[in-house]
Image 1: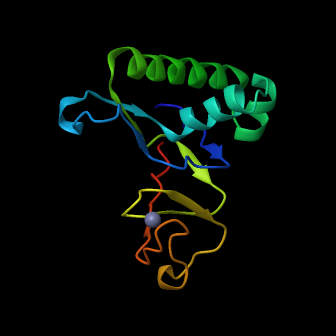
Image 2 (image 1 turned 30 degrees about the horizontal axis):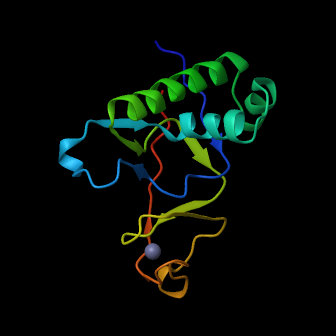
Amino acid sequence: MSRPRKIRQVQFPPRYDSFKPCGIPTQELVQIELTLDEYEALRLVDEQQLDHETTAAIMGVSRPTVTRLVESAHNKVARMLVRGGMLVIQGGDYQLNGHLYRCPKCRIFQERLQKLRPASHPCPQCKESNLVEISLPAVQA
Ligand SMILES: [Zn+2]
């Protein structure tokens, strides 16, 4: 029997869910998937410049888990830059402190603490009113 994986807390999801080189068609690019928990570890350690100990406390995981997530994220971002791939941020073992919505037009993520009626909360960028709620992955045993 495998040990249940700890669910990682994600405070702020990424603003965009994919990155690719300008002017290159998507179908010509290798897709590299960065999970949301890897993204959150990268955000806290490299962008916010927190140490692994603090990041572990924020994400609700052990320090070695943070080290593994950051190493994996570095490897994926480096591969994307060096080989010219498309980075897609999705999946992973994570939990948000709220509801996550994505605009189908400009693909911006938005996190809300309350479940919202999309029609009354349009996308702040393009005013699209059909925001899609992203369903979170089930807890894996
Ligand atoms: Zn939008």
